[in-house]
Image 1: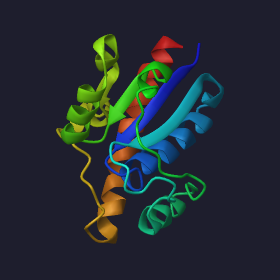
Image 2 (image 1 turned 90 degrees about the horizontal axis):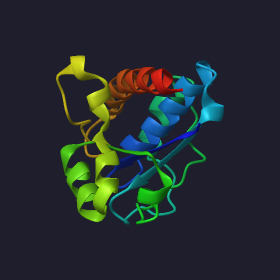
Image 3 (image 1 turned 30 degrees about the vertical axis):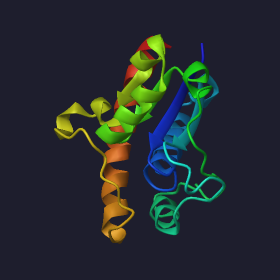
Length: 157
């Protein structure tokens, strides 16, 4: 069985492509990439077609993850049919997704940091308007949540 996972933030140039890249690496390292479809999108359309923010690319690159080939896209109604999990980076993204989704699809919208409950946080902060450290902080959170997500998925594989 394949699990189809969509990471979602606001513009799809910082948090969600970082999460996509990190989770892809975690899945490869665990030998489970063949069981997964991994993608990312944004709730807004400002950056459609753009590569990830250069600061996001630099931060992930330092951890051996290349996200330079990703391109921003906006969440579509089809995503609710095409993905088993739509993982929002913060509560605002979660609210936007649930307002777009219909019926049962809303049950598949979750907060990504719910997979790292020991952090005591619900939102991955948006590093866009901050400095370089914000991207490193986001990566730390995303790595922990990715490991938690993988553990949960492995129990169902």
